[in-house]
Length: 260
Image 1 (cartoon, rainbow, N blue to C red):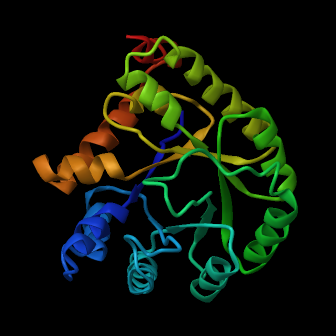
Image 2: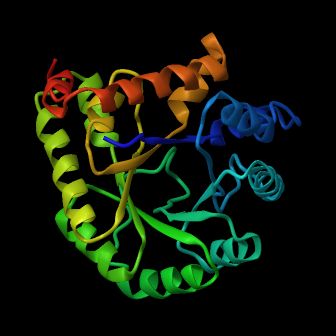
């Protein structure tokens, strides 16, 4: 199995900074440290209410990722404002995500079926500007098919339900993992590149990383939290090691992890 890329989301470094209205901790410094520790790229979500990442952060992140030759993945709502920002900055990638102002974090995937008539032309405009577009979706056959027909190059599967089920020792965890596997196979069959993210930690990463169709995992909140205790570099390096170990072992063995 090929090596799985790791994108590190540094949003919540900005959350801590903004809690005091200070200039530190600096999410751009965190991005530099993440790349030095082995991250393959950086993810940042510029929300409409600017609750964590700011416009100035995006300016700086575009600059450092280009200088380092690493991709910046801009998570963005499907709005004219965010489209204009993406077109002005032209990050390597833009991941279209649902966004509600009252939510604490992204809750569920983008409804590409319902929003197809708005999402499809947006994907076309971003793609024409040289931006690699992904849609963050639930592991649902209808959403995978809709994303493919909308013209996206990539889908990112929402792993939150599975990860929550594992942590809660829910009997539904194995079935949710199977849904992720089926969605990954379906997307790959449509010629889409397949990513995954949301809620992944050390306990849940290996069964997800063992899904052969996946090319990239995007992980943020857990790594930033773990960095409080062991440092950002060691947290990323341990996650990288678990991902690599998953790729070195058989999917059959790893599927059992989510059932314990």
